[in-house]
Length: 273
Image (cartoon, helix red, strand yellow):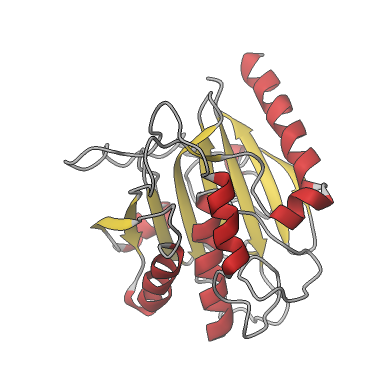
């Protein structure tokens, strides 16, 4: 019952903010952020990207690290097929993966875990290799899913270009962060917290975990139905926002925390491989 109440409360917050024009204009992903006692945040990243995504991955990290609030560093790497397919979360870190996740209708999937204080404690960003994308969209997608993990949303839902990865345009200018995105990070991370929700150890973080360990096969149990159904990992839960270009799903963990998933749907112009 406690977990259900937590899910209802979290769902109400997300629905309210997802439908708010002002929230979209400011493009914060709800009120979520990584708790930190210092700036910039030395966020550790697990590189589970294959060589054909490495340029997009490296450039995305470099672009985001131009913010005075972020100092992401690749702490470990593992691009074995099974590792990429599972894309297990690591406590206090971000893992970025690409794999053939099958014919689910999403191109990208960003997942964050929210603790009972409302802070992001871990996250994953997945790129679905089931579909073929042009280079502009590959840049856009990698930068977008990584940006979602530390709390940014979208500026536009109508497909027009605002010159940022945060719109849903395939325009040449909509690939990387712009000055407004950096301003948003200044706003979201404009304060210090009483604790760090990221891994601040010198000897590496906790061993990879499955963020909830949904063991059901695709289409069954906790992976049943929906555009967000993925291979293993946290349960998708319920959709709380369904738009033309993306969906938001949420699942409670039964312990006052919850997973939030932002699903980037596959644009119609990209064909199945």
